[in-house]
Length: 303
Image (tube, rainbow, N blue to C red; front, top):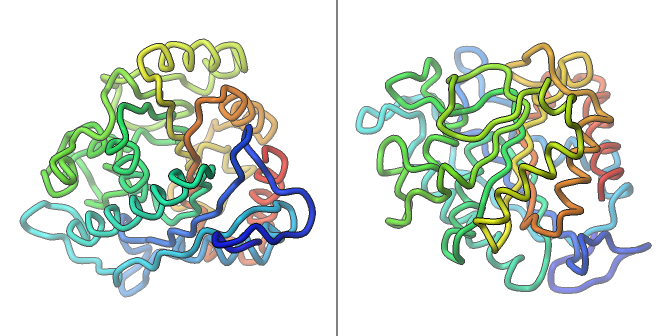
């Protein structure tokens, strides 16, 4: 991949419309509970695993840099009831600056996590710029709060924080909370979570029934209120475990690759996508690298 300071690359640079694709690495595992006592979640190695599986060959993109996360701790902070809350908030501010730098230079950021708590960084960047929406592709709605969360991890609460719910440390970053309004959020593909949601949502069955036309209609509703655009959150557990087993909380009944690819293509073709993040793939759960290759093929296909 080319460095952000230049456009040297081999082949044709991937673009979304007239915007060059810029990869940002955000390898944070701060939002997850330990997989076992004394162990850290492996999602922080997502960018390296995708690179090893051929991402930099499959996609010609500008490399926008890597933002190292603060040290992981399993401790639940008593002030907030959330693991690593202060570190998640600080990381969000730093990641927002990185995303803003890409947007300011006309790029399309592809943010490789990491866990779902990295969502707060891009949304903070966009909130500083105006009113943006959010398309949330995930097997879980991540709408818990410290009072309802079993894990106390920010990755299971990030959508609640983004919409202004929860402790101010995370729900009111820079005094700009909520980062996205309820009416500007579309949750798609969730099989587990808080139902009914006070947000628009499409189940896997809904997506299959309407496929591209249904998601485009919902996008049109969002775009009518949000003239600037929307961010795309992609937690790979939205895929069925038969396709993507390398996640910490697999949920049966998910999308297959062709379905997810079609949805992502519709989102990118809308002309309103501000950027996309990919989260939760865990290389520790993928010893032969087969799930990493699935994700590389998915990304190479849509970009």
